Image 1 (cartoon, rainbow, N blue to C red):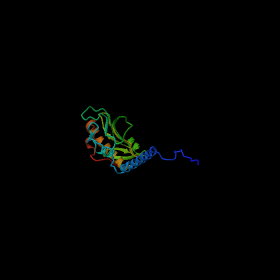
Image 2 (tube, rainbow, N blue to C red; image 1 turned 90 degrees about the horizontal axis):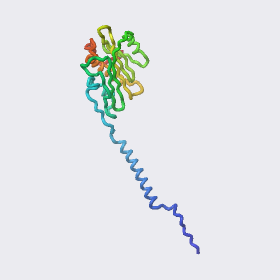
Image 3 (tube, rainbow, N blue to C red; image 1 turned 45 degrees about the vertical axis):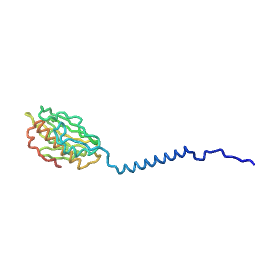
Image 4 (cartoon, one colour; image 1 turned 135 degrees about the vertical axis):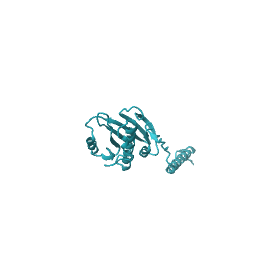
Length: 215
């Protein structure tokens, strides 16, 4: 009698195949477990540490803290020129702040051309997407990502306007009333410092201590 012995062992599991299956199963369990743990772990992003004063320590940071996220990339003051109080007025300055994935661009400049007057400011504030704001004798506008105030800053020859602007990058694509309010308030903080302590504008002491309001 002839006995046929099967020599094909491809269908039979080997110890190597078994080890591979066990390894893959273990890896799959670890991935699922890791994902489940991640769902319950607290946010690992570091909390932003923002000083009480920014822009060469000239500007209070209350509204800066409100505009930047609480956590994320570290706070940084990238540049601040002509924000030093007591220095000779230069007529313009800039300060850039960042943190948590957002950027704040702050600037001021003296406008000396006669055609840029209060009537021009009112026309600028009435453009689409611009919301007029009032701040004592000063005026300006706020948009979803920018606020600007125009403050009287006369020189001995004629009346000038000091423009103070605050822009935010990395914010919402649509209008957020809370952000727009904070932008306006920060613009007022900067305008007080610039006109009173840096550019020494006549009458700056009469500017309001509060925030701008809708016109």
